[in-house]
Length: 602
Image (cartoon, rainbow, N blue to C red; front, side, top):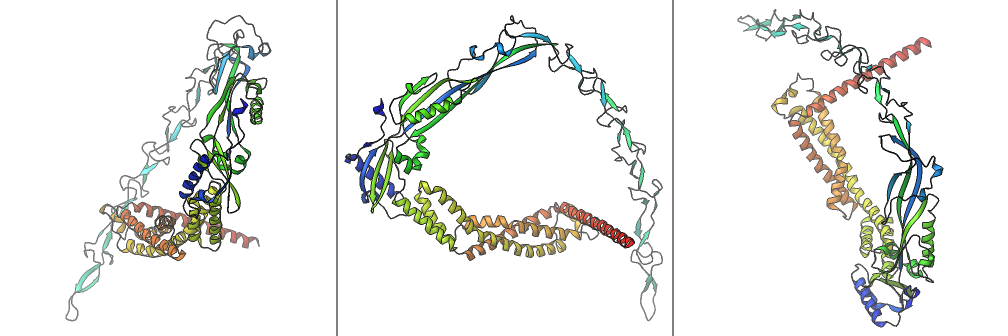
């Protein structure tokens, strides 16, 4: 059997196979762009061809773990056998026939140890079947959670104040109001005389004193000028009887329904417990896999080492045993070390509570040929795997050329020629050298970030410019035009308290949005224009894109404003202004008090 496990065979005399592999190399090199070695196979000198198969070894192990513990459940009047086992020491878990396992699985099972059962009164409730309620502690009622035991809750009609808005004067505190002066018709002037010198002379109206209005308001008799009347719901107390407890301050305990008792959670009301010894069976399947490789294959071909499990292979050997040992495996092969390592690792997980149920070991073979060659006086090696002789290039002149491209790109990047460096690195990526993938990926990412920087910087500049221009334009629009639907036109009246603040709030918010959107504009310009030569060009495109998007944002804001929805924003801004004003006023008072105390003391 050991003859099936070959370390290497010299196939250097197999010219037919060598010719086929040369064609594979030519096809491979001709499919790779950006390098000077087309038909590369015709340019090399073959030194030797070795058949050096790889041998994946897969060991599956099914473990079983057993444990025992004393448990109990509510006694359900089941019939129990005569007791044989009185404590844990009376039971050897491995002598019991538990669940039989034939397939690899991860699972857990629990079993009664028949003959260990006995019945005892419940230790928690003393065989009563109930315990004192844990919520009311036997009192049958609890403090009302709605009123916290006071029996009263805050009146919702007056919010606890005892007062509601006067319905007679609508909370103004007075009735009547300002009316147009009937003497002067609201003009504030009345006709005085006409003479030859002066025609139609007018004088100040004595009724309204020139104001054009007569104020006939009087204090409201219902609320005596306060604007508030006594709340009818609570009679002015600010509190009403709690609807949950009816004013008692306590309610029936919801957990025990007023009985003061809960069903015992240990025996579930059964009063007795069935004690027993529980046998736990835990199953765990484990897999160990590795491949035995030729020394040169292992040292020079990381691509093969990383991906051998995906390659085509054939089964050479399979065995299942309760526990595999070296005696069950092929003898005197170069795989012995790998066999021994797998078996030792599997055995190391066994102890008094866990053992191996069964094991499977598979040995497979991956056909591999190593073609040693020279090119321009330097020695290299190709690997070929599978029946189709799939090429695994390893280190070769094309990969060295790719490395030169990476280095050239790095030097170009050091001189700030990022676009040039990016295009050179992109060529290296297209060559697709396995060993360089991570390096090339990281370098492309860093270069792409550098190329995008002018777009983002230009977008910020454009954002600042647009914020200044649009901020001014929007202020003028919201102050002088402010087209808005009829239902919200009240904000355009000079008498409205938001009239003066609305232009400021909206222009500031619009300018802020325009500035914040500049980062998004940088992303858009980067995606649209991509890798363009010249940082100044990318900077300019970033500025233009940002400004264009800013005016689109302005159009959207104006459209939303026309619906009247932005009135809410102005209202919030107005409230924020007054909050800040009050805060600064309080700070000013505190500072004044501190200064006064300082002068008083010192």
